[in-house]
Amino acid sequence: MPGAIDVSSVLRSGAEVGPVSMRPKIVTRDVNVFYGEKRALNDVSIDIPERAVTAFIGPSGCGKSTFLRCINRMNDTIPTARITGRIEIDGENIYAKDVDVVPLRARIGMVFQKPNPFAKSAYENVAYGPRIHGLARTRAELDEIVESSLRKAGLWDEVKDRLQQPGTSLSGGQQQRLCIARAVAVSPEVILMDEPCSALDPIATARIEELIDELRQNYTIVIVTHSMQQAARVSQRTAFFHLGNLVEQGPTEEIFTTPSDPRTQNYITGRIG
Image (cartoon, rainbow, N blue to C red; front, side, top):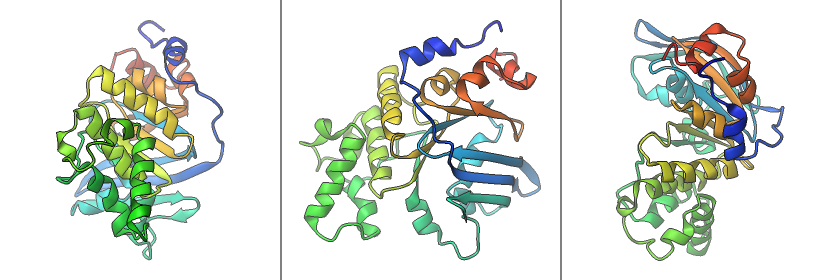
């Protein structure tokens, strides 16, 4: 396959793949998204395994970010959006009428394309979620959550002496790790990442990728990325989207080396994009 990514060399230079749980954390069936009259997603069905990284790849505008936002009901904030189908997390239909989206979004953390720390201190950025969700009864417990979350995000040693300084004073890569710490502080089960490295330099990107591999030991992670090399480095499973359709899904190495659909092969080899 001329021009295809050498997945084996990318994986050797990146994280170890390790075993992938076969138990699905997220199950979607026949998910459609409409913005007014425009249909953005067509009958998307996929099982996303727990404690693994699943990458969504595909050209711009193919629906991968739209689908990602369905998983924590962020499309609910768009007045013209309408979602049909079924999305379950641990067997619970998250679009059921009695589901409260506030605790749901605490279970499903989100990291955006551009780092977006609050206009607060680094400490308050991480403490905000646990405080509003009542996860800490004392200041000592809150301090412990903040330190633990910053350690999980690989940021504690860099900011422990600057906790009261604004989060916006950190570098871009540090800000993104602060946002990851903010996401894990409320003990989510799932972390969604929408192009988390697109605004970062290569060194910061490498640090985030290492962090993703560490986090997948305890969290289910779904990442949208335009970088096929990144998908090959960090994910165990990959799903390829094209024109609102989920074309193909499977183990990352298989998707990149022996795709079953010619559209996937054409995207990987650069014929479409």
